[in-house]
Length: 268
Image (cartoon, rainbow, N blue to C red):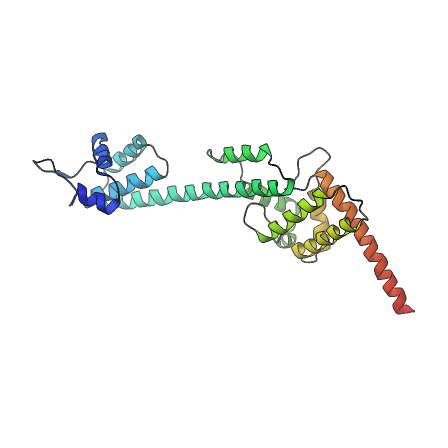
């Protein structure tokens, strides 16, 4: 048995809180002496652990009391295992909710880094994620998009693309490049600045797609939004993609000229 003082020392839960739980009928000591000293059993300690865990997960005390009361009729061992399994399940749900929030925060962060501003759509998505999930997650939507448009072999290639919902070094590189392109869209496609950007685009494409130009071109066309539509992929709106097409087309044309000149020199 544990006295109130011992329980306080072992759990860092104040005597006042323990008394409050007693008043609510949430956690009553197994023994109270004639002089008023409270003593808690091993069962009481487990119940206190449940209360603490559920409270930390956001459950109101009234709901916690209902949960505990429903379990009181069960045999001790079953009650202990049921309580712990229930907490594990609740913690896993909370972990998944926090992972969703983390992904949304990364989306918002990358959006700001690309455009220098934030989108209200991102904030709305974050607020919605704080509520019970009712719609497919971004991961499910992404997987569905891939399965609808790509073969299993092609999916293996595009699985190497950067993701904007994790701390992905490839995403950092791509985001910085998109920001640089956006900042220089006033440059003519043939300008040295634009051509340096085009080379960076092609270097990234080579790395992301492993040199598979067929999958790269298919993916690029599938994610191209119509004028006025929202981007299909973060940061790649219609105007930016059109500008990237222009600078890359010029870059490829110049590289083609260089290759032709080299071939002519070799033949001569």
